[in-house]
Structure formats: structure tokens, C-alpha cells
Amino acid sequence: MFIEICATSYNAAFNAQKAGAHRIELCSELDVGGITPSFGLIEMIKEKLDIPVKVLIRPRSGNFVYSPEEFETMLRDIKKVKEVGCKGIVSGVLTSDFEIDRERTKELIDAAFPLDFTFHRAFDLTPNLFESLKVLKKLKVSRILTSGQAESAEKGLEVLIELKELAGKELIILPGGGISPSNIYLFKKHGFHEIHASASKVQSVSIEPKISMNSPKFLDETKIYSSDYEMIRQLLNS
Image 1 (cartoon, rainbow, N blue to C red):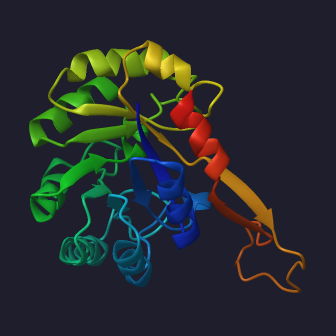
Image 2 (image 1 turned 30 degrees about the horizontal axis):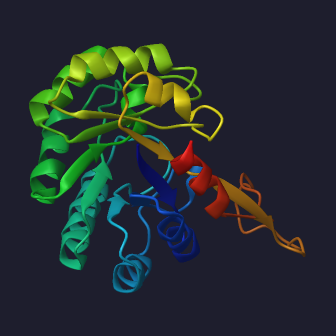
Image 3 (image 1 turned 180 degrees about the horizontal axis):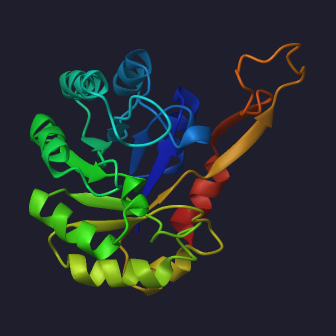
């Protein structure tokens, strides 16, 4: 099975490559669902590692409805990612009523061409996944990252199976959300050929900061997340 690891740092990307993962999705701030990583990080990973890199293009946390300036930022980021030589883009845009924003998503796909384009988990916020799948088929995305509109891919497995059957050979349904060595067999059993996992371990800093850098505070500043080499090995060997 093809294993994609969500990496948020050089160390996480290094662990993913060392463990034998097939690809990383590079992002930052996983606690808020991920945002676009720094270009210094992208460049360093491309220079020092060989693992294929897909980059999340999301200018901020929150919803997936973007202002003209935010959308322009996304287009500029895609241009930079292409210049660095990454393998793919992970992105997408919704309308204010949570439907796929066809026009803007197509613009992102066109800007990313010829890179692989994955529509991210904003898909799970749409009111009808099966209608959204039809839209993304027409837009010719390569993949859809989804938990099947559930808290985890395991809980959304029945929906994921339906989506995979409807997608056929036109695009790849990429299950993601809570996939671990203990449940990866379920996705193999039902014919999924790729999965997305964070395989995270948490490192606690020794001294808690005296003041919070968050306003209002909503993240635990004593935790650092990284990909777990042993967990990735278990995923690959399961």
C-alpha cells in the first residue's frame, strides 16, 4: 500500500523518508488543520531529501472561503512550489454555502498544472459528498483526501467505499484521519491503494512558557508534533 505521511517539519519529513514512506504532504500548524509551510522549509527538504513532496496551499486556518487577496496569495504560493520542483499541490476552495467553488478550484488546478492536484478535506464539509465528487471529477483533480465526512476514516469507511466505487479510475479516493497500524488492514481489505496518515508522536517541552503567544490561547504551546519512525514502519509492514 502507498503511504503518504503528513509532515510539518524537516525532522518529520526525514523520519518519513527514513522509514520508507512513499510521499509526504508538507504543511504547517497541524493543530488547526494545516496551513501553507514556509518556503525555507520546502526548499531545504527538496535539497536534502529525496522523498516526493506535495505541499498544502491554504493561506490561513478557519473556513475555506477566501478573499481576493487570500486567493491571490494561494496562486503565488503555487507558482513558488512549482519553481522549487515539488510533485503536487493539496488545496481547494469552497463557497459560502460549503459547496465546491468550481471556478476558483479550477483556477488553482490550472495554476498547478502539470503537478498532481489533491482536493483536501474541505471536501468533508460539503453538504453532499457524492455530488461534490461529481464536480471534482469534471474538474479532473487527481485525488480527494477525505475521512468520509466522519471523525475518522475508520468511522467513515462505508462512505469511503461508496466514494471509491463512484470515483472509478478517474480519480483516487485517499482515506485520511486516524489511520494507524491497528486499522490500516481495513483499507487494504476494501481495495484502497493509498492512505494518508500523520503517524505523529508528541514531544513535550521541559519548561512551560510564562506567557502565551496565542491570543486567545487555543493551542498547547508545550507540545511539538513529529512523524514517528516506528509507527510509519508499522504502517508499511501491516
